Length: 142
Image 1 (cartoon, rainbow, N blue to C red):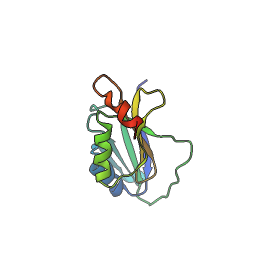
Image 2: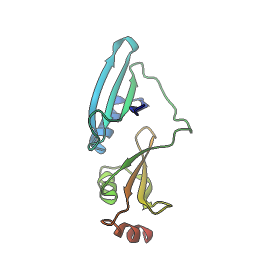
Image 3: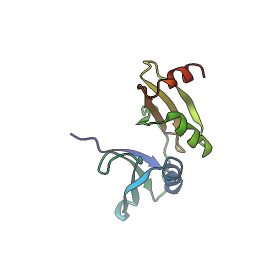
């Protein structure tokens, strides 16, 4: 068994792509327009994800269906190498973090959360190692 993708239904594909590409720097891995089903699927992946690896599949109905986010879905998590730098870069692009960078409960990672334009939550994690021990001190006193 191999994990393939997470599908998110979006109401405005152009806005979703502007967010994923323009704000997060994701790349389009695949686009499929399905006239028979009046639907478009666009798979996007983070810049450092390997080709053929898992993606986020954005599903857009041509008929303008509306969706509500349920409370069962939690978040999508991504490992990053410079959490504070990415947090600043995204903030400079107008993105606000619902939970700013902090040290996680087990002190193994610095974590932060933001919501995308459709209300889906994303978690960014920078694992603590010998090269970034300063994060423990910096974020414990923030």
